[in-house]
Image 1 (tube, helix red, strand yellow):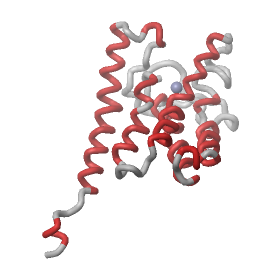
Image 2 (tube, helix red, strand yellow; image 1 turned 135 degrees about the vertical axis):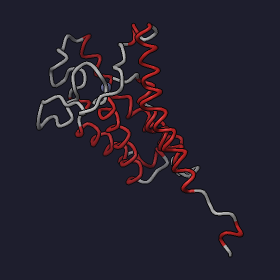
Image 3 (cartoon, helix red, strand yellow; image 1 turned 90 degrees about the horizontal axis):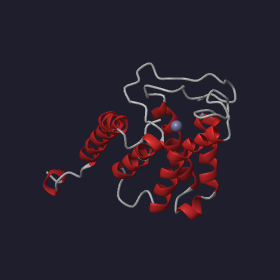
Length: 180
Ligand SMILES: [Zn+2]
C-alpha cells in the first residue's frame, strides 16, 4: 500500500480542485474515510487469514464492488453529508476506488482483487513506480522515509500539479476581457 496518509491525497485533491463550498466538509471527511478504509483489512493478518485469500489484505475490500457499495451507502446518507445523492455517491465511489488503483501502482506485496467476487486474480498496473509502504510498526524506518519520498514524487506532486493546472484553467477572465 501507499501509506494511509497518501490515500487521503485523492479526496483532498478533488476538494482543492473544485469550487469553494461545492464539496461539504462532511463529504470530504467521508471521502477521506472511504479512501483509507480498504486497508482496515490488515486486520486479516491478526486473524491469520492468508494474504492471498479473498478476505486477506488487498482482497475483497480492494474491489470495484466494495467501492460501489461504499458509494451506494454514501448516497443513502447523503443529507447527513450535506450533499445530493448523486454527488455523495459519486464522490465516495471515486475516492474508494482510488485506493486499489494506487495500490496497483506499488512495487511490492500482492496485487489487488479489483474484480472480486467475479475473479480472485490479484492485479497490478503494468507500471509500478510507487515504493510499497512498510507496515505501521516499521513506518519510521529508513525504508519508511524512502516510501514517503516516493509517494511525494509519484502521488502528491502529480496531483498538486493537476489541481494547480485545473484551477488556472477555471480562472475567471478579468472584467475588461469579458466585455471587450
Ligand atoms: Zn490497500
